[in-house]
Image (cartoon, rainbow over all chains, first blue to last red; front, side, top):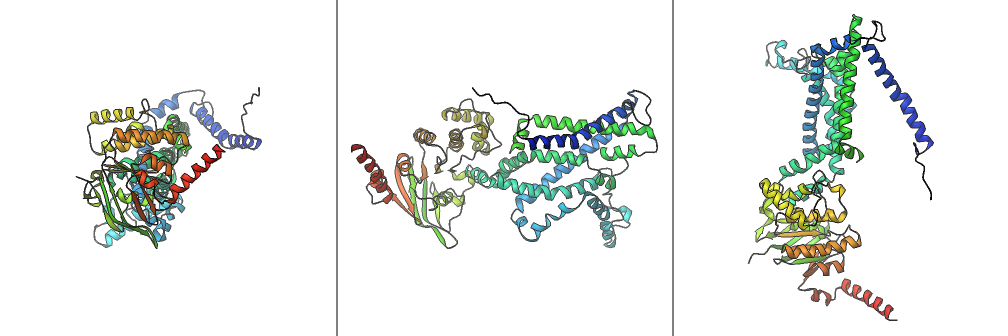
Amino acid sequence: MRISEQKLFNNKAEGIGILLFLVLAVLPLVLGIIYALLYSLGVIGLVSDGFTFAYWQRALSDAEFWLSIGYTFYIALATIGLTIILSLFLSLYFRKELRHGLPGFAIYVPLAFPAIVVAFLFFQLLSQSGLFARIAFQLRLIADSSVFPELVNDPFGIGIIGAHTFMATPFFTLYFMNLYRQANLKEFRQVAESLGASAFEQLRRIVVPVLLKRAFPTLTLYTIFVMGSYEIPLILGRQTPQMMSVLVIRKLRRFSLSTIPEAYITAIVFIAIIIALLTVLFKSKNFSYDLDR
Amino acid sequence: MVTPLKAEHISKSYGSEQVLDDLHLQLYSGETLSILGRSGCGKTTLLKILAGLEPADQGKVLVNDIDIQSLSPQAREVVYLYQEALLFPHLNVFENIAFGLRLRNRSEEEIKEHTLTMIDRLGLNGMNEKMPHQLSGGQQQRVSFGRALITNPSVLLLDEPFGSLDADTRSNMQQFFKNIAKQFDITAIFVTHNVKEAMLMGNRIATLANGSLSVFDSIDAFINSSNNVVQEEIAFWESVQARRSN
């Protein structure tokens, strides 16, 4: 009888690849988290005074910290929600147009913009001294540029959501268009029609659920990406509330060294939330199944 | 008496290629008409036109004596079944079968009762919660049949429904269809390129070639016709018989 030995790696190249990934990508991350944890507990760092939970107590009782977490989730979910609506609309109603000619080219253009450029573009267009405010003033729609609605550096993060949506919509439009083809949705729609579904019912019961289910892992990962974004909320956000990434950097760079542990605590909590979210999602059968596909 | 399905002067071409040419067809209640034709002869196009899923260049399709194009999808009562089961991938067995009832806004109790009865009749007990990718090819086709039958359509259009199945499963499914056709008094068109399957499944047989449809009044009329496909099949089995005798 032949007993096959179970190997950790399929071949040497795979073993080296995984080892390099662990050393170059995972190890620095783990060391960074450990460093941040030790710093937040007062074990190491410039203000180290021995092991203490004082920084954690201070950070967790700070309203700004919780506001920042809520604000980060709000921005990410609003962005992804708007992106889904716009991308579905474009991919379902302009599918043919977006495959050829100028629209087909134009949809790719926003994908080439770095985040910082988009942030400045939105600032130049939407601020009270920006292009739209000037046009509105010239058209005598407003008496003074200060009357123009606050669309950037505003309390509701309109500018941040707008900029992120501008970047994400072309990507998800193209993604949904490809999924539509891959998932045989044209045939599924015909089956549904044959069973008595109107065009609206086909969208509601078949097309949209199938697209969202197949795109769920990518949508989730993009939501996490938005939660961790920095340049756009830095330029288009306001002092308070701030997204967690901006808050971390602000606390790290403050004149007072005592806020550094709080910055690390904010970062650790952010990482913990993301890891918890991913763990729950990866344990879900549907999520793993869709990733496999 | 109302005719479940009637097609008059149907023509369809793609560019310069004439796929269907002034075609006539009438289906009687409770019968299965097998349509035999080679790949690419226009069988699928014909079925899609009959189902109202594709417009004909000329002619009209009448379902229960009403022009199909004037009916909403729900009122057409003609269900088209593909070669693949094409079960909705995000719905489990129960929801796939219940799909047509949900479209018709039936009550939750009615949906549950009808769907569970159908699952039982399909021999799929205990599989309510399974997703399509967890089913075998034969099971998927059964669900596909159940999904079509639950709304009690006037006509079923079957486009080589067992074409992708292995020989054993195909044979089982042929018997399964015969049984449910009898049980539900189904009026159907069964498209295939397999002579044996056409004879096994149909009460009448038609052949589609060069855009024209020839309908035979009975299986015997088809066998006795000068149709090359039948003669080839008979000649083959006679040669097998002769070899065994020697």
